[in-house]
Amino acid sequence: MKSARRPEVRLPALEPYGGGELEPDGDYDGLEFRETDLAGQDGAGARFMDCALTGCALDGTRLHHARLLDSVLTGIRGVGTQLAESTLRDVELVDARLGGTQLHGAVLERVVVRGGKIDYLNLRQARLRDVVFESCVLVEPDFGGARLERVEFVDCALRSADLTAATLTDVDLRGASELTLAAGVDRLAGAVISAGQLLDLAPVLAGQLGIRVEG
Image (cartoon, rainbow, N blue to C red):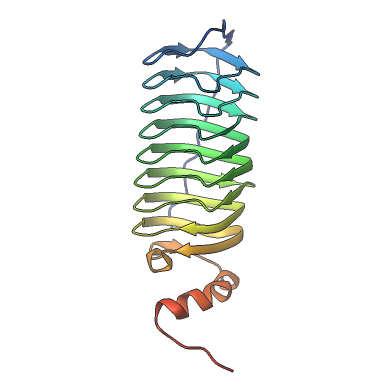
């Protein structure tokens, strides 16, 4: 079982973001976005490198094909944030409050998601490598068709996850404080679970195998 490699983000001295709306294909380097309202703005294809986003609103923000590199996002919040086919590399996401975030087709590499709660996270067809979900709550995350390699869930609630057609390699679920699957129990090959989790999943596994349990 190979462990996930965590990001080592060391931000340089940052310049405050000067305001104004995000620009498609914009280039943001060494900036601090603090309590910035980015709701509804279009930063599709933009690159954020060595940036800190703290307490920002991202409701409906369009960041399709964006690249977030060597950056820390703390206390961000938003519903329907569009990050489809984006790249997150060496990123820390801390205490986020997000709903319906679109990350389908995205690439996540050396990412830590720590604290916070994310509802209805769409990671369909995404590629996750060296990703750690830690002390957070994920409600109905969709990993349909995704590829997960060296992914760890540490003290993390994973509620009604969908693993349909997902591929798991060195995925450690033992640290999940809650683990329930809505679909895709047959895709757990390549994952490690605890004995207690096996008991919790037994009814779903029995159903998958066509076993009737009585008495």
